[in-house]
Image (tube, rainbow, N blue to C red):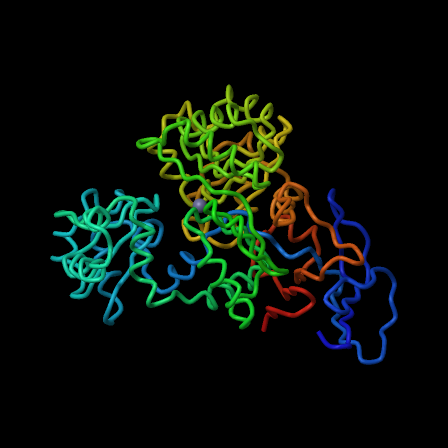
Length: 470
Ligand SMILES: [Zn+2]
């Protein structure tokens, strides 16, 4: 920032409970300099908010930035964009090109047994890899398998073996594949610009494989202006020793559980214990009841600390709510999946469990700290869609799922306003605070009934405009 300051006139500010007054806000030297009835200084840039809402910049508390960037140069292979075999074939053959074509979001409802054979027959004549929406499975065509085998010469035999399968089905090789394809880095700059359009000024990147290389890469991207958001990086234990700065900090040790191949519980207990010894909290991915029971039991043995997190908590049976509260664990969940995947849940999940899915209200009422993240690119990256889904609990076809888990619009917004390192306490704009904020084009009484990223007029990070609507 230069000497000049920015005066936002007649903005509506929120307290943690709702709207406060209409105020003028001066931003100077990267911080909120003053709030009140303010006179313009000579040289001020003046923006007239005309009573529209000004909020702290949104923080997405569970994101995968690199995968999201990669998703921008790949094709969707699952609902709602692609719902059947013909659409899948069309999508894959839509864009001419050479080199890897990456598909995302595939689900069996599109085509039950997608494999190498189908891709060879109906896909394009280039290396193709399609990721199952669970994130665990890659389905690869023959050209793709060949490319992978060539590129993986350097890997030890046991790792190469994991990258070969006669049907082209590669499980849990996300890290290996991203290592092999790192030569063509995904467009993080485009991803970052898109997030700025949503009003996002910070993310908690929860990718389990995040390591020193990720930390160095993000630092370089931030320095060159290609990554606009602040990032708190969770991931491997080794991140503990990484250098941090204003734009990049280190978060939890991230543990990814799969209920079909759970680790030795003693190993998880030891990992939690060691992380705590190094003053790092632990975040455990739990999308099934089994995974949640396993994680809770590990936290009970190792001892939980304030700031330890359960990610997703996709399925929480009533009997586990008390246990989560007793362990003082926070939950970072994704109500956007009620909108995005709710119709499939209604069909595929027994009715008795519908109320257990992506709970919000019952967790808050039980005194459990809750915050939201989109899980981009597995979930839609737009936080406004997640807020709408949390407040309405409607699926994309309009069915209501888990009506008792609705939260108020005020609560839904607050779930994206916590500090990156304290996601459960919403920020409010106050003088002296770093000027990360988001100006909308309407007052709160309109926004609260119409959560839509189209209302974002301007996004500022450290006082710099990182997005301005046309
Ligand atoms: Zn995730």
